[in-house]
Length: 507
Image (cartoon, rainbow, N blue to C red; front, side, top):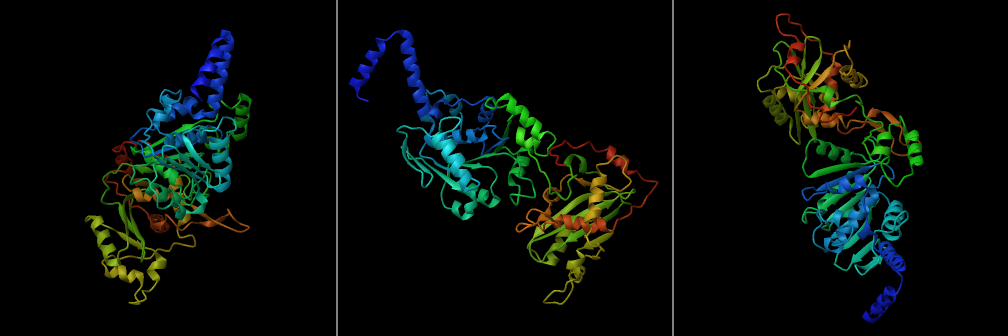
C-alpha cells in the first residue's frame, strides 16, 4: 500500500470515536489472523507441553494421540514453521512456541508423508495446509510464499525453502536422493519407507516428526511395528528420541457431550487406550500374548551344578543360526540363561562360537532342528546332524510333534503368570536381547489377500523366529529336573535376586 493511502486511512481512523476505532482495529487484526493463522497459533496445554520437549538433542519426535486430539494440527504447525524459519515469527504471538524449536536457518527442505494419496490430499494438504476447516490454513497468504503447486503438492517459499507432500504407498524408491531437514510422517507407514526417510536426514542433521494414533497392531498393517520398537527404545532411555501423548478427552475443541459419547463407545474395547489417550495397543496376533518383561525376566544368579543344562540350536545354511541355553531346576522349571545369535557362517564356525559361549560349563543335552538335521548336504551327502557332530557338538534330534513344540512353550510361559502353577514355568535371565526381541514380535501368520484376507493361518509367521524355534525344540522334550535334597532349592536362589524394574511390559 502506498504511503499516502496509509496516511489517509490513519487520518480517517483517528477521526472516529474510540469504540469504532477499536472495532476497526479488531477487524484488521481478525483479517490478518485469517491470512496468517500460523503467526497466531496457540496450542492447548498438552500440545504446548509436547512442543517444549522438541529440543535440539532430539532426532525423532513422536506425537501419539487419539482421534481429534490435535496431533495432525501440531504436525502441520511444526512443518510450516520449519519452512518459514524462526525470523518469520519474531514479535508475533506464536513466537513463544517457536523460539526453542531446533529449526535451522532457511532454506529448509521439508517433506510431509501421508499413508496414502487420498488422505494426503484431503486431510493434510487441503484441510490443514491450504484451505482450513475448523481453523484457518497453516500456510500463510502473504509474501513469504512464492508459489503453491496444487498439482504437485509443493510449496516454494521466498526464503528458498521447499515443502513437498509425498504418499508412503508410492514405495521406498520415491524417497531416495534428497537431503531433507524435516520429515513429518503422519500415521505409521511401512518400515522400508521410514528407513529411507531416516537416510535422507543424515547428512544435514535433519529431524523426523511422527504423528499417529497407535492402533496398528503387531500382526496387521505394517509388517514390522517399528514405531513401537522406537517407543520401547525411548522408554529404555535412548536420548535422541522423544514421545508425547495427546488425549482426545482433554482436548478443548471437542464438546463435553461428544467426549461422553466417545468414552461410552470405546469403554472396555482393546482400542480404548489408543482412541482416547494415544496409548499403544496391540489388539491381536502375538503367539506368546502373556509374555511380560516384568514377570518373565529375572536377574541372573549362579546356576547349581546339579541342574540339567540344555543347549538347543536352530541352524541355517544362510541367515541366522541361533541357540539358547536352558537350565532345568529341581521342579522342572526352565531358566533361559544365555543366547547365541550369528549369521552367514559355516557349521564349524558356528560350532566353535557356541562352544566358546559355553565357557567351560557342562552341557547335558544338545538339540538340533530335526528337519534341518535330517536333510543331506548337496555336496557331501551328509546330514545336518552329522555336520554338527563332526564339528564337535553331539546333537540329537527331538521329537517335536506336529506343532514343533509350539503349544508346549505356551504352557511354560503361561504357567509363569499363574500363582502356584502345576505346570513347570519358564524365566529368562536378563541379558538376552535377541530372545526378548523375537518373543515380542513373534506373531500368527495371516492371509494377505483374497477372500480370507486378515484371517489366521493358525501357524506362526516365518520371521523373528530363530530363537523361538530353538526354544520350542527344548520344551518339546519336557525335560525333568533332578532333585538334590542336600543343595539349595530354587526358591533360595530367587531370594538372592531383586525384582527387575519394569522397564517394559507387554501382555
